[in-house]
Length: 116
Length: 115
Image 1 (cartoon, rainbow over the protein chains, first blue to last red):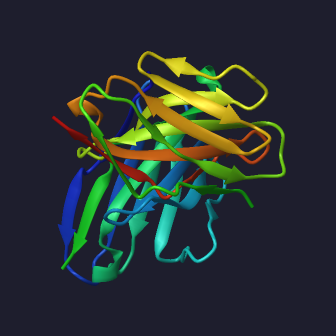
Image 2: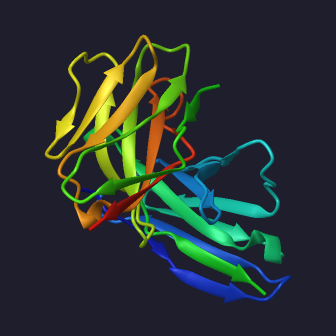
């Protein structure tokens, strides 16, 4: 199947700093990517849809100024957590649908963010 | 908006036995996909099985099969001959064919496999 990578796999940052997470589709192009947040023992919650060449679409309750999304190319989307606080600590997962495979979504391995 | 409900937070099965995980969903659409994903301790999401709503035949992938009841909006996953490696979180997910390919996930079921 298709491959989606995320970097970094884990990051620790201090409160008030910003952190950037990258999501790459390695062997296919993705005009759309999705960013999810997952708290321990909970399900994946969609945060936003990243669109190549246009603004991201945020889900209700997600602060667009805090979670900046940039879909820089057909293979790269980035999520920047600005002015991070301990409550932003979570597991962030991206996914990308592959148009060659009926838009089946492929998931990155996730990024564990810890804000101290 | 679509909702997906998994009513079993945890399930347990003896190795080599069969277990069924439940999933119900709510939608007014007729064209959609349903999925079961596995999330092992590594937290990498793995597609287990997929069902297209217009297909009446239940999908099967080796030891995994589904019971898709469209009228009842039910989509259960049956795991036969359970193995220790099947222990994981299982998420049921819905995808509309009319809403940008985004997935709506259920709350998940933690499956434990006893040796």
